[in-house]
Length: 338
Ligand code: C2E
Ligand code: MG
Ligand code: MG
Image (cartoon, rainbow, N blue to C red; front, side, top):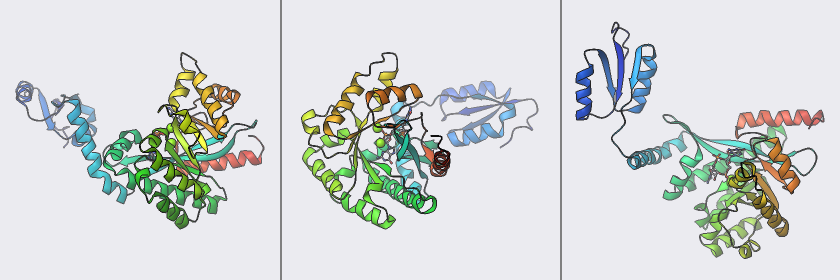
């Protein structure tokens, strides 16, 4: 609907449901303005775009409280889930991790991080839908989808680029309740023709507390199949230190909050140092995520951190862009520049 023909009249776009006050407002305005009305936010966006040259926009707030809007959005995400899986709207991004022990950082692996390319809501970050899908169990299907994509990607890079990049995938606490988890993962790597060592599993620290013995047994089973286990978000769930010594893990991933705290105003790095000590005591690798600049990187290196993931090296990248990143690294390696 274009409004250029409406001579000099400016256009006002009113976005709301019909309410008495809105009717009154329309009465007052309609002699001076050409009024468009929609209660659909996407149609509104469309109208704004089409009429951008002669449009003054008044957005009237919806008469809904925040919770209703949140519920509606959640329902919309849930309703769109099956189609999204079918149409491959979920996209796996890859963020590199570097071992920083030597003088020159060495690419060791990447983390697979999902995004949702929603046809109407745009690109949605995982924090907006993972907790929701954990609540209703849809996460199991989504995680399986992400793991499959990651496994196929690993194989493709091996075959086509002749590079072996292990990829870590996130395993939700909900996945861990599945007694067949190990079978699913075994089948998945066999189908993709990769080794268990190619697919690293990140399990959040707090998941171990849900049903400690059962979870530990399940993780032991995964490890006995050859999968390596990283404990994600370490330090926030206040694990019992006594229990940690018995947990089947290969790496501790320091929660990003500690990195933020350490390198913001307070500059208190003690928590990081403690976690690095714990990792040393357990004989496992320690990974820092959310490392944003060279100064932080150097400081973590001085503290004895093994592996770093963060914007200082790269943001999470689409598979194609990650490939370019890999190729550049290989080229610079052959020139001995890194
Ligand atoms: P996580 O597993 O702890 O992943 C690390 C998060 O830190 C990612 O956020 C990553 O983009 C972000 N990050 C890394 N380096 C930096 C940095 O230098 N600065 C800043 N500001 N952020 C950095 P993202 O991708 O938004 O993922 C958030 C969380 O969502 C993940 O935290 C993970 O718990 C969950 N998640 C993501 N993908 C999946 C998935 O496929 N399955 C499951 N179950 N959870 C997932
Ligand atoms: Mg993770
Ligand atoms: Mg984390």
